[in-house]
Length: 305
Image (cartoon, rainbow, N blue to C red; front, side, top):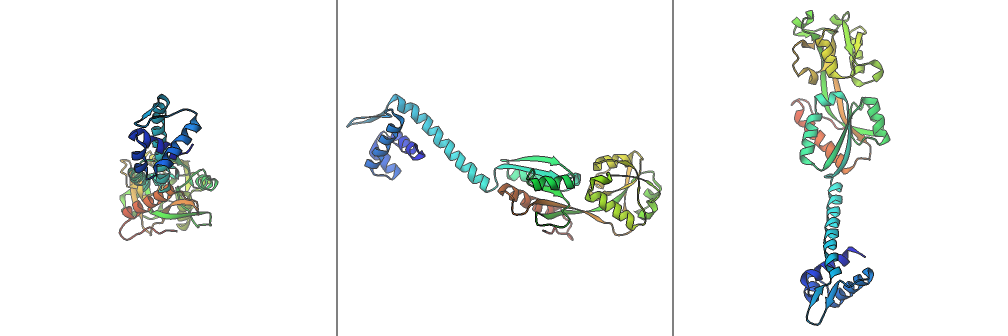
């Protein structure tokens, strides 16, 4: 049995006239009659009662009509779903992200994407850079947010933000009285930071910035989330460098100050497997790029990599 059999039968059942049904289907009447007889033979039951004057539905025909309509409707829905998925308007998308993304572009990306593509189901997973990279390579994630560094041919990405680091100090700290802080002045201070073994871009950037200022930070407390580091600064455990996106949210007991020298920036990319991005993933990356362009300062533009 094929879907055309159902369409032919529904037309005859609704018209109760082979001639009108044939015209509706753009068929010749003998061909339509043959298709209906073939359908009845396949089912092994008569669907129509025929006389020279009229055509009527049998009891099996009435039952079959209801199911035939439902089957065709499901087939049409399946066709629409497949076409929508091919356009990236339906499906599932697994997205990984680092902590920094939640402070910067990710909320706007998710809000915009869900508004434009409400039928794409998003599964979000917070992971640091290396675990996220491995998950992308294994195929456990479709898209990620972290710093790509140098593309190696397996992963590609587009820059969505370069977030300048600022000094985060307890508000009573002497350096908080100044508008700008020389990093070397904090070499004797206690620091709070991500664990070094996490090997995140953030840790690497903070350590290299301190090294350029001539010291290794004395880390007295570690935490794996930006908001926890900020809370530790607020509680007086130590000082640290935080991305401007984190510092832009006011905290009563924390003072944020710019560095006297040009501050380094923490990059964030939207990343996917090379030559392996689903239609929904393509739409997601398009949205991420658009949000990044809208959020970027006038003098800075995101660069595709």
